[in-house]
Image (tube, rainbow, N blue to C red; front, side):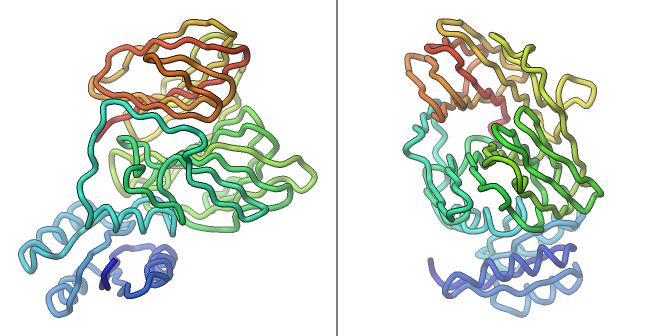
Length: 341
């Protein structure tokens, strides 16, 4: 991509500095940082700015004022909202900003073998959607579902302290024990069968490590765009009663704090189920206009005439009810109902 001059605006200095480093790793990309709304107007007016990146901590009214000012000064200035934290989504955000709009497809299949892969030795990450060093313009997201990483972490290794912002981050532990620690005061163990949620909001820092004396950790890392930016950060965790998900879908996540599972700042419902061979299952859409994305954790599944195998993904929209059938014993399915805008 051509040379770009960024102005990154936000209130969290740690995230701003990380964004600057990430941006300037790209040849020809330069970034100025600004944490004061009044200062940003002067810079936008007096300097050659190609792209304004709205980071975390700004009030909604301030973000709207900045957008309006950019449109008045120079219609060529792109203004995009940053989600997720440091490096994971920056390139994809920028590439899609200057590229063609995503084409909405009624139905998509993402086979396990087609995923992007990062292998650092201690970490193997298989990515359904563009993330970090994996970029595919056809695989940016499915509605508000932005990240679905299938991560394997070597015992005693992990992710050091790093920030996130403006994203609902869900971790589903499949094997081993992951140690989580954050600046909200939480230090927890996430074991197989546990679900963790972080609403990153204005910014949260945390670390995750596989337990030293434990086995290799395997977990799903899922990011969902929130319905509102810059909310107060929060943390939640629960342990599943697997007996309740035998041959049925168990709700593990919803937008309602009083409902079953953990809640997030989005009109999304997640369900997990473990099914015997030939079990027929159906899911009724909770909110009109939502789509469904299915991820087969183990086993195999038949849906809409398609045979899905282990770690395959399947997304569909414009539907009120989805019927499916397990085609092997021990078929474990994650069903995510998510807004498509």
